[in-house]
Length: 291
Length: 296
Image (cartoon, rainbow over all chains, first blue to last red):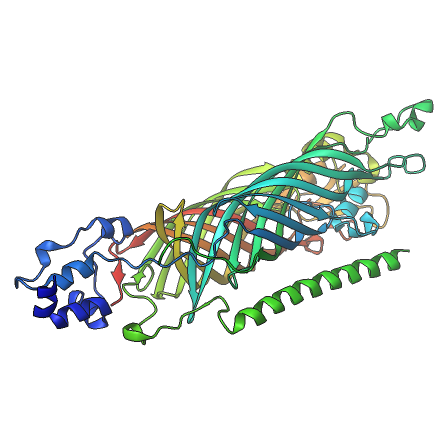
């Protein structure tokens, strides 16, 4: 080895520097049609290209350099970190009522890709829900003489698992942004209350009711620093809900609260977009693996 | 009371926004000296080297042909399931122009349509808006075909790892343009007698349509021209093959329910309501020519 170093000092030095010339020397073809199929698997499987190697007996440096792939460390590790995520939530699929929520999520990452967490969204801002109604409610009421049973939401809380199957990076000018995409799902509760829809408003009043709720979703997190990210996620919150009955019971039955609500549950799916920031704690971490 | 509630909501929103800004500001300030996102500071032999070598040019002077399936979302009375295709030519790897078109192969009525059909009263007060509840699906507006031309801008691209095993190139395609949509609506009708409770309708070919029953199913067709815009996530698995997940918004006015929305006893163009029509599309991208060029 020492003899080799002595015999080919410039070659050894070049190998350690990974100079541009070295790369250009091997791949001096300008932008032209690649012979490969363009996917990474094929390039990795292409071997060491021995048949293209130089005929001279001394090109050891090229052979070694060709087998080295520089892989960047994952920009931000999630392992054993706590994630705090305040967010705002916008419901996408309710044609009758505009709904906004403020949320907070906490996740603990017990592997780098798997977390157990909790999220909470508050929807009840003390406003009259009818003021948040879309014009569709008025049109349905005026033109079709139909009341639209609908429920107001107070809050929801869920326990979730998160899994990160995708991660990557993208370039904006000279900045490289790391991002990951995650799947999330869990179970919890949703508190809702029927909004009197004009069927028998003088006699009916409703309390908040608690429903078992589920959710699934997917999100995208863009790392601004190693501990601060911007995230957006699509969530579908689902629960069986009970709406106001559109029939009024005859006689004294109309004063019986059990007749005010439909006996059957209706499956509700609240699809929403959430936007927010996440803070990873502790803000610093150490890589376990050597570079 | 309502004013107080509104103020309360505004205050709460303001506080939340402030908290988010402070959180972001703090993070950016702390990170600014070291790295906001990931600054690429390279010294040594790689200083001055391009950010990416052997960059695969998925778009530069290539054509993308994309058959797709789409469905509209957020519709009031009827959803459209669309099958179509799109072709794009890119002058540069980040800029291109394209056209698309599709046909609504199926139209699914929403639950609201079914409820109106089953429960809405269709006696005299409703004669113009709902002549017969069972025929309500026949009076609602439908979107039959779609097409458009768009400019495509691809500022972000990168690579993606899936399950830490599979790697592929991905990019975000923002686009804006004009769309042409085949709209089918309830035909114009005049509720009679004027200024009073409608008893019959006057429509083309039948000035005495009793109970507006014929008017309910009479249709007119037109082409709506509207802006279109959206974003697509594209992932490429092979030199000539990729998938596309696309969201497209096309806002324009049409009479969704076939009703007299401005209460003037007429069914006409003044009853059209602005709708934020939007659709989600899944497409398969074929890239031509099939071989991918790479940069130095």
